[in-house]
Image (cartoon, rainbow, N blue to C red):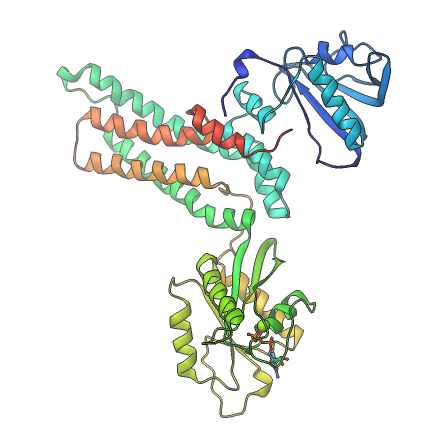
Length: 453
Ligand SMILES: Nc1nc2c(ncn2[C@@H]2O[C@H](COP(=O)(O)OP(=O)(O)OP(=O)(O)O)[C@@H](O)[C@H]2O)c(=O)[nH]1
Ligand SMILES: [Mg+2]
């Protein structure tokens, strides 16, 4: 996407969700937004001050299209930093389209995806990570996602990064200053202090990277696959967890063919449970596809629940299954199911959870086990949690370069190399907030936004 903000055209888009609603909001932003809208309203808005709200009609020449409420924002005191007019009309798709059409006929152009947010960023209303947080806020589905997005939008994360960068910038300038006096062998930047700072920064950046595990779980949920042999009770377990008869259960092995996915929120985190076809050698082509799909689901999951019929299965077969299915060493909860059918001579390893999936109450125990297995029990929404894959990638690069700085100091390299490595760290941290950005980067980010945002 090209960035044509410099020509300062006035853009418009429907900012509410597509379709019919009680009201819809059409947003207009740009230098001419007030004068363009003024021609289309039955009351003049030219002389109104910012934050004025006015009730009037939206018209085309003499045809009244709708009664509307219009809010005026005068730049820079608006979301985009430009003059903005928000037209609230009745939420018919026809009215929304007519309003847009008239705006375009009068000199507006249709906004591209995320163009309002992009303008907000380019006009310095917020930095890149804050802009991205708005997208997360709009999509937040639970308390944790809402909290982290809100904090990021308010600038919590940006301030933390700014502090880290500032500390390093002053050192970078001192090291660079030394280069100007290279003949004189001076050291303006105290190496001991710098070493200490780099250590401090790298552990800070590490903990931000670590927080992504939680951040990702908050944002995208934790995919948890339920696997085992046919008839083990996997579907019964899924139903018990959900407290509803979601999946078909029967005593015929091979009941579940396709995978069944359901989301369950446990302590604020969405766990996406996937019930799969029982894994066995089979000649039935449909069941075979189901088995393949089950094995594929393991690859994309973060957690595994392995269920076996404890009244029937031999210990060595269970071990064999565990080794075969968990090739990527994911955290795994092994459930010794059908505990109600166990005879006194059956012994169950301590690490297996004894369960009767037909007993819904028993299934609730699984929720606690899954939650603690996910390693998210230290959920602390007070500290900064990185939720964005782009950010964590930049942090990882910054971390690698911090290690290079450390190594460079250990090797006692010259100031110019040291300065280069420090600049790299600053560069990567700067890409998160957008202090360092390129058209490509911005294009990529905003292209993923919807129109009207
Ligand atoms: N006694 C007893 N029966 C159970 C228990 N859990 C499941 N069953 C029964 O075991 C049979 C198979 O259960 P399902 O949940 O369909 O098993 P599954 O693992 O999904 O089987 P497939 O879909 O064929 O792979 C059903 O008749 C269930 O009622 C349990 O804890 N105790
Ligand atoms: Mg099943």
